[in-house]
Image (cartoon, rainbow over the protein chains, first blue to last red):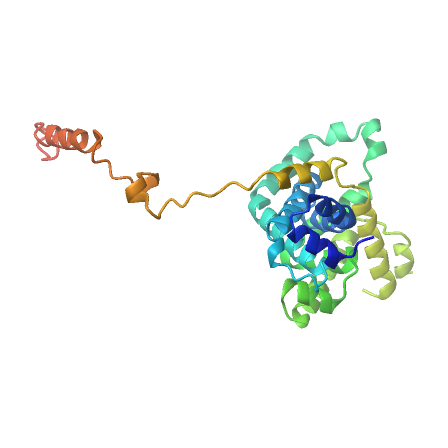
Length: 190
Length: 87
């Protein structure tokens, strides 16, 4: 199996097959990050395409000696940030639509599909300020270290730490307020 | 938030993300898009005077200038229009 450096060289030579291999290798990483930041599966699917398309367009600027993941994380975070900023005015409208669709969703066939706790977790993430949201997603979902996040976002490590601190406090408060029973969470307070 | 609770939170977040998957036809769509050349964005400013494109077109040969001039002359000499002698 070709390594990332080899794939970058092939991409720089215009090999589309290499793009397919890179896509298959890293699509989960990009998709889950975009999904967690935007909270929208359709937007995450579009961003997934955008990230790899940009990578292909600007592959001549890549250094094959450097790892690919940090670039992918950075591009995903940046594009997701742009998407969230563009669509933030739609959020209240989506909430109203969701509220109107509440009765339909509550019907038994939908109840089987929709996991209420997952929805509340998603809402709690979406309620975070975007700067905190990105750090929380990279830390908890992508399992990156503080140093890696600071390098990807090009911000000081202390800033990452403080954003993470405030982000998780807000998450915790919101989830407790909504009565989300994280697995075994009740034992924490007994 | 202690470590145990943090791991529970991370687990809940990962469970939520794991419910969704990238689209099945993503690879084909990507390769299709990559195969087509990117659209060239037109430079609307440079050479626009010469090429006559964009917002900087100087309509010398068209009817824009005479039409506007005629309209201005016509309305300038209308009684009560522009000289406040409406009554």
